[in-house]
Length: 384
Image 1 (tube, one colour):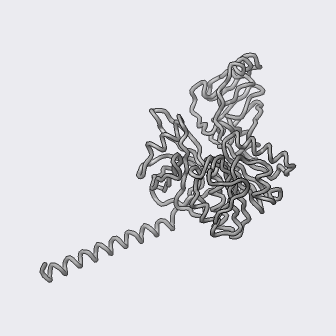
Image 2 (cartoon, rainbow, N blue to C red):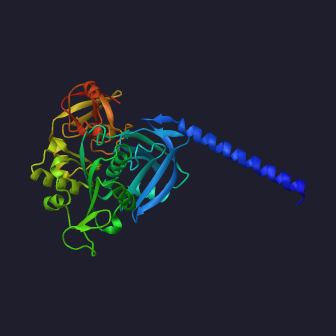
Image 3 (cartoon, one colour):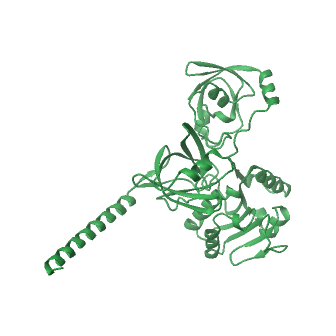
């Protein structure tokens, strides 16, 4: 190459590099000036996807243009997905922390036969764009105040606890946290490396595991460099051994329904102050049995009026039952009164609700209810 050509090549390279640097600078500047996303529908792009364990996958999402995500640690978002031509909604807790606000991470456990978890695991990849809504959930560290924390989780119920822990360690140095996670075995521990790093970094972060099966563990407490481990299922004796001062802490629980029922029972039996006991759940709606169908057929009936439609509804059926029976559009993500997606307004008549989670006092006063958790006690007019 001649000197002139070499010089020209050098100049071209320098100009390109300068342009690339300018583009990066502009991109970084735009990120720092990004608008806050606090609530509502949003389209996001999957920017990373990785395995946490053999059947648990994490997805990182960012805005199509720079977005700063504002939410409360422990809250969830709801996916709006089209699967085989049908719109499906499903809620997942964010495992990321709002202290790192330029992306969100959702961690999903593949469930055998699970429509959404398998679709996400198999079909959503880096570069794909999906629609989310939220955030929602009263199970968080803003709406629930505490001085000393005890996080109890099992399976994928670890995700809100992980988000809460990261937020506390990022924003409140020295937070007193005891974290006890239950798993089948060592290979099923989600976020194992990250939790170990957190425990290594903070002496106030006490990490423990209850493992159903672990050949390498002996009876009693087994100590490693960053955590304590026991074999078996959690009970009062094991919890006391791992967290001697658990009675003085505020307890947060999340996991499969049988786990949460067992934990609540054992905590109640210890004479714990249950006003400091909080749990999260995404239990799906139970299928109606023949006996409950018979009960509904013999129960008192009233009229549910929606958008000029009149629907006969028994006192044993929920508003959601009536709305879905007519094929009316409604989002019902959790179907258990925790996500708030099926919020609607009663403009006349009386109802009875088993859950008002995510509803503010002002919304309740204005007649808002959660359709999945509300039954009518008179003729009712509903506004969607």
